[in-house]
Length: 224
Image (cartoon, rainbow, N blue to C red; front, side, top):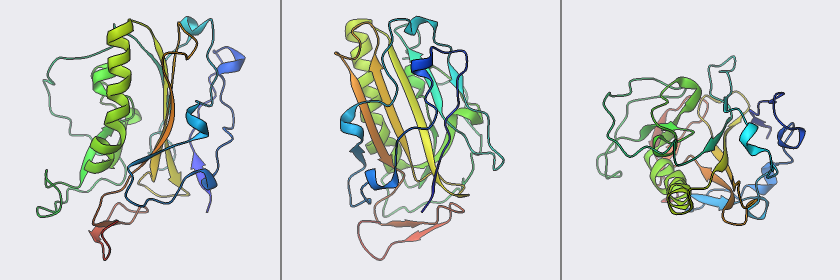
């Protein structure tokens, strides 16, 4: 099956940082079998660390023809970290959104979250649709959050900067992302302190999801 990866070409960046076509194939993604995430490319991001990382300009891809979010590529620093409480409720509806609940299967009851590609704790309030996808509670909390916390703690400890890119991956014209590719590399030490490249499955145990529409139902098997 064809995977559509939404990667922006950032012409204003150093050539080594321009991702172009990432050498990433469906064969590198194990089928979801109960693990929320899996390491890709031996944990090494597809972009290269740069000495002139400070010239990077943060970028969020424009919505595509189906109004889906694409890749977000930013520099995270101690100045961008956010520890305050959210003051306004986010009511945006990213593609594939449905307000649906499974009270007996999901602790927080609701299947879907409005998932930020670049998390609020790392970058502050950026609630535009270019930074949002529809993701399951499991995907948000068990998949992305541990890696976001890892980046947060690294920056708090070292005060270093981190190049960070999150790319939603869609199957053809599906409205719901199958998952996201998360890549990060610490800047000052050229990745010696922090590197990661992982794929997080947009799945929910015990729930069968139609990624074309975002519709869902109870799964017949426990893996979802």
